[in-house]
Amino acid sequence: MSTDLSWSRGIDDFMKDSKGTGKYNVVVIGAGTAGLVTAAGTAGLGGRVALIERNKMGGDCLNFGCVPSKALISSARLTQSIREAQKWGLKKQEPQYDFGEVFERMRALRAKIAPNDSQERFESLGVDVFRGEAHFVSPHEVEVDGQKLRAKNFVIATGSRARIPKIEGIDQVPYFTNETVFDELTTKPDSMIVLGGGPIGCELGQALSRLGVRISIVQHGAQLLPPEDHDVAEFMQQRFAAEGIDVRLNANATRVSRHDGKVTLEFREGASITADSLLISAGRTPNLRALGLEAAGVEYDEHGVKANEYLQTSQPHIYAAGDITNRLKFTHTADFTARTVIRNILMPLPFLRQKMDLSVVPWCTYTEPEVAHVGLGERAAREKNVEYDLFTVPLDEVDRAVLESEETGFVKVLTKKGSDQILGVTLVGAHAGDLLHEFVLAMKQGIGLGAIAATIHAYPTFAELARKAGDKYSKTRLTPTAKKIFSWLYKRARQ
Ligand SMILES: Cc1cc2nc3c(=O)[nH]c(=O)nc-3n(C[C@H](O)[C@H](O)[C@H](O)COP(=O)(O)OP(=O)(O)OC[C@H]3O[C@@H](n4cnc5c(N)ncnc54)[C@H](O)[C@@H]3O)c2cc1C
Image (cartoon, rainbow, N blue to C red):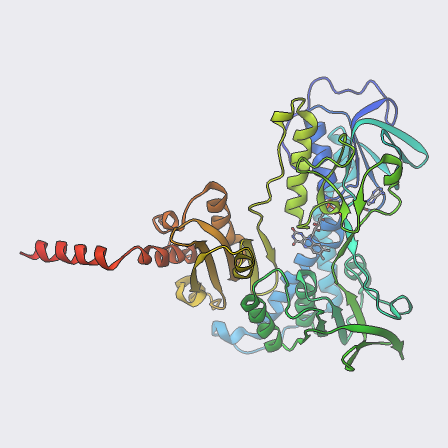
């Protein structure tokens, strides 16, 4: 996660008080994306800021989330391309790789990125970094390692961790979570149960399957990737099946046990699966433990710290940012909340403060093909009684996708009924996460699908997918009356 907020520090560097003494402008708890961005931004604007981290600088994204998972996915994707070499006119072959070396590469790349989030870098930005577990002792004081820190404002950015489902026997079996799998999975298991078929389970399940692990993805609900439309989830399920991944839907795991070094998961329906290992990816739970929120008078529930649209908690001088308060738990939303918090802490006048606007939030699941989404899907539109028109373009209508042998996928664009106002987009395909942003910008800036159609897109690019969706919209504008007028004009021109 880059926190390169290139704001210069003020000449007055507030260093009159030594580290930990006096009063800070802001004390930030948690050095994940939300905490780092808040600390860097506040220091960059000239504020005196303390940042507290109990574990690794960089939080989930760098250490146990986005960064290692995408490095692993990249290697896994290449193994699959090699397996499918005939698609590119090459000889069919099996990829040669060493499981441990693939993980080594992932850790090396993570280490390459880590300095961005390091204690040294943050200290060089003027942030006082404290290592230890922080807790509030009062609404105006946080304690870390026996030292009390005072501040005008506090930011709770303590993130989330894997939710461990309450299944009988879960405490007696070994399992991986995102916090352990990247560092502790050192030898390739023959098989693995992935408990949870959301984005994390799907991404890691497919990557590990491609790296030679027999994967069973166990999903409680009726589809993989619950936030997506059913057809999108079904598309991915078929892809997984084609790659040999065993997907169990509507599977209610009731008991887990260990025999002869293997893990067996039993279901209410009577079936069971046995595998060498278990990975839990069954949702997230907020990191509230040991924070002393009662001492601070900050309200919370099982979803996290409660905050208003300005990201203030029940104590207005204490803010919350990132997974600890976000419903949409992503690095980019953690970043966005942090930027909002920086502004709202700085602005003395209420009307200058910024409300959280999460109306246009993109996300992407980095499976192959990628599944990228912004705004309303069809199911959400129906649930909200929003009338819409739907424009769908399969990727095999895009020449570049065909030439790259990447024609699997499609885009679905929902527009407000009878207009070109984009309500939501789902893209399934190669580079979907990158391609989505043309639509994200369009939605944010109120640019319609017609305007996208009227924009020259370079040929041959994957980006033509957006223009083709625009063309489909434009064709709907050709009413029978308009066509009659054009025919008449053509006829007249021939006379
Ligand atoms: C496997 C995986 C893959 C992911 N992939 C993506 C992706 O591709 N794209 C994306 O946008 N998002 C992804 N995410 C989500 C993303 O990682 C999180 O949304 C993001 O890290 C949230 O940032 P945060 O700052 O809120 O919390 P965190 O990164 O969790 O940071 C919180 C920090 O607070 C510290 N802390 C907690 N309590 C205390 C305390 N009392 N005192 C001191 N320190 C404390 C923790 O140790 C932690 O370092 C992924 C997540 C996972 C698990």
